[in-house]
Amino acid sequence: MTTRSTTTSSRIPGFYRLGLAERFEQVNQRVALPEAARQHFADTGNLDAQIADSMVENVIGTFNLPLGIATNMVIDDEERLIPMVTEESSVIAAVCNAARQCRSAGGFVTSYSAPVMIAQVQLTQVSNPAFARLKILESIEQIRQICNATDPVLLKHGGGLQDVEVRQIDDMLVVHLLVDVRDAMGANAVNSMAEAVAPSLAEWSGGKAGLRILSNLADRRVARARAIWRLEDIAVDGLSGEQVRDGMLSAYRFAALDPYRAATHNKGIMNGVSAIVLATGNDTRAVEAGAHAYAARHGSYSSLSHWECDADGNLCGSLELPMPVGLIGGATRLHPTARYSLDILGVSSAEQLARTIAAVGLAQNFAAMKALATTGIQKGHMALHAKNIAVMAGAEGEEIDAIASALVKAGKVRMDVAEQLLGELRTSSGQG
Image 1 (tube, one colour):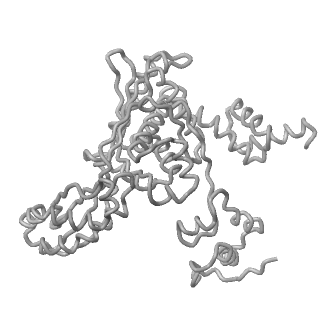
Image 2: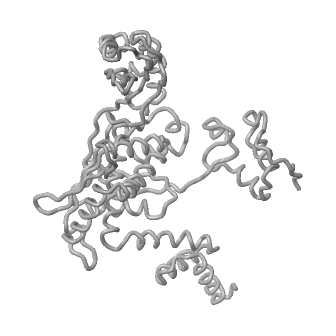
Image 3: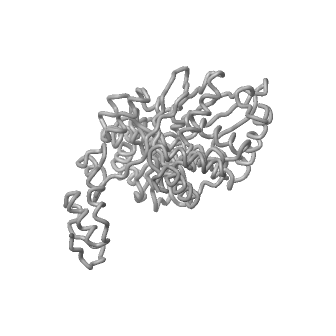
């Protein structure tokens, strides 16, 4: 039996120098984990412990999430299987259903602006900002030379500094470096450029360089998707295609006008977006921050998507949002599951990945709005959530589906009901 220290101090000198097992023991001495925890954390699954330890600090284990495949997706006339990592029931099923219902109309059509990221350099204590702004803009070729010298590999692949903007905000000047980052997410590249050019910008402006960092409002790197859902394909039992369409258009109008509704509406879009971003080892926080900032770009928070009907009355959906994702660098190449996910997707560029993600977000939005406008969001969600409840109640093997079905039939997807049903099932089968 392990003898645990009575200390509760979180101060552990040299903790980062320890191996995974040693770090676990230090934690275990302080919080009295059950014995099974040691073996649990030692099992890092399909991510090698050494790789995990190199990705983030103070690692003691890994945290596995389900990776599922969304089917039925046709994007720019190509069939694609979509790997998605999520803990939320119904997300992957929703994409499958939405994609199936627009296949007859050709699936999703996508486009992309350019792989341009923005780095910001803040200049303070500028006595004559209007004059300094022009002086900086006149120095664009010198800025280009300084920035491109930081990343000759990017330059070799056709990337590099594209343009410079200077904005006056109150008494500050903010210089935007617009950088083509090619197939990288680009954070490291643009941050390095901002650091390198900041001293020269301060000299030319007569001010002081402050923050030097990328912006996650990547509004020069926008992915777009559109699709048509024909009325005959979206009708449900008891509701015509016209009724479903009109209910969804009403739901969209609500989200377009009310930020409280828009927050949940856009969260539904991000259910799909974040799941594929995570599966490919990209930065979910950067994508989410940029998307929500983009939703407020007109001065108030609103829907990221747009819905209307065409001349034939069919439902037309479109989505555009910043999509700073890459195929090189970071976890996209370091994490083996991310690499295999990219293989499953079959994309060969960051642009293709960004366009695919936008299509998934639109599919997710369609499915959520249709559920809300017809049966209600809980029916489908709780039907899938019932399996989680069955497992948490102790069901195993074939018991899981039996208990889940009984929960849905009873309309009570609750732990206490699942435990009662499991007891009755096992009693009737002679296991109780």
